[in-house]
Length: 122
Image (cartoon, rainbow, N blue to C red):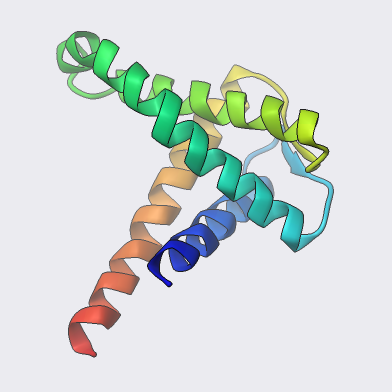
């Protein structure tokens, strides 16, 4: 159940990015957006872990700002994989991927905060 809730939160964050960031588009159904969220989660889990570990010295040197570059790269890879899978998710380049990664990260953090808050009350 928690996996599905996190997948839904990621899908909502991706949708927010398509609405806010010029250069990020989704041309498909809400189910396809859930597929994009699944691809994004897999890319983050597999490739993101390796990249963050390899870039740890640079991330420390830049006081964490390089993590934004890694997130942009992961979003761009997600868009490329989603395009090849026919899910209709597009990112027009690095700058939209950078801002999209930031928007997705903030949106997910806020939604997960609400989720944790509701879990602690219930």
